[in-house]
Image 1 (cartoon, rainbow, N blue to C red):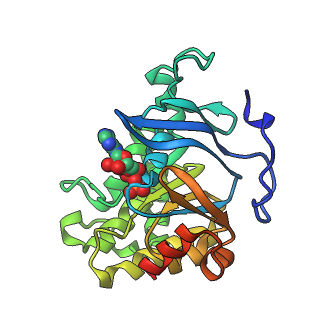
Image 2 (image 1 turned 90 degrees about the vertical axis):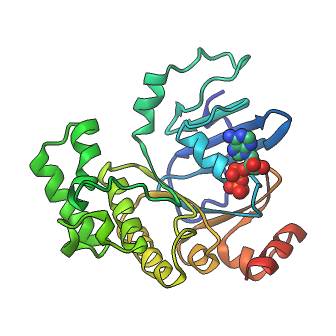
Length: 270
Ligand code: ADP
């Protein structure tokens, strides 16, 4: 089955075109634990989707499947019409090789809770290493692009600094610039502010708002920052036990949640 065989989702608010991401009946188990339970969802190009829900409901696993850091147990993941999962047994597809998946993975960038910059390299070098060594971008071009991106994240004056000279919030902004330097079609954000001191959170979220406003990058975002989710998302998916309990426009989800699990979850975080 190809992604175009399945019906359109009319919740793709104002975003035209073919679906960029398709989860088709995805099951993920760790041993006896079912983390994703026959999950179906689709994301259109340019769409910004936020995943909310209690801890353990499977949100991070979705991002890790997209990064091919985990294998599906059953079902398929597609990105831009290409199979993006290790093929489950019985799927009728040949197993995807590591080199195939590594090549596919370049379409996505992921920013984690822990930013893991190279401490012995300047900010500029942290941002240019992957474009130069993975994409083969000429060093001059990579430097120029890094400077533009560091300007975008408000760190134009820190290109020659080392990560240890920066606050956690500034380091996370470098990590965002580093992801964008690979020119991904899709940016995955996994609780990117959870490890930060509270006073540093707003600066990072402002940068992501700016990225959302100034680029047409597709974003999939796991966050506990509900006001950020409300501002930037076209659509919010509420997860519960590896399934989507409810989905909708942020105004509807936050102002008028229908499902009791969404109501209880929002009560606990707002
Ligand atoms: P969320 O992001 O919603 O908090 P996760 O996707 O991180 O949820 O995790 C869902 C469940 O899967 C949790 O119970 C977690 O402990 C479990 N899990 C995640 N990764 C692994 C793993 N590598 N091995 C075993 N269990 C895992």
